[in-house]
Image (cartoon, rainbow, N blue to C red):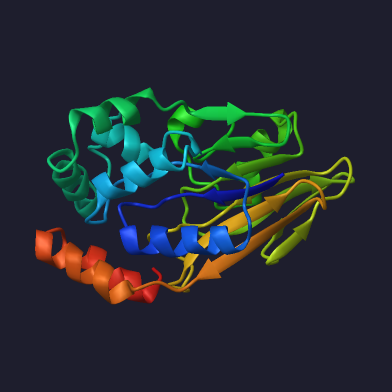
Length: 241
């Protein structure tokens, strides 16, 4: 099976379309989404429609539940709160129902999908260092778990009694190892590289490939400014921060 795993689209239609074109060229067979379809960007409704159209297996992100009303977003940044409130006014009741119905964790025989942490996923913790990843690695019962949330691609690994972090673009899965892979962000990169990020997981050859794709950042910025969302949400796209 060849999976494409995406996360943190955040209403960025241009980035999502670019990633999906790349997925078609890569002959992907199934699409997984680790949450945060909405928030920050100017096309939440369109992005939701595409995710449903592609029948992507999707878990809830904190912005998804905040827009749906299942999560208190008072602790979000000013820009984040403004984006949630704006998004609520630009999606349908059907969209809200879809977001609220998303589960926190989905698992099949090949992998686990969660937005942030497999350990206490409802807390939406940021997996930014090994000490935070260890509890989740400890409860994994399949070798691969895909996450998002930090918008920074990379992988936490447990194997042979060691824990370490990988930033390799291609990860070769070793027997008896565990991999918690952050696929980065489609719509709002934060690792200094403004290109959209996602990964391809090939279960036949047991590899995970983290990929970057350029997209029309200027158009995404223009839309954000045009609809009156906070200016910083537009400016940061070009910086990848």
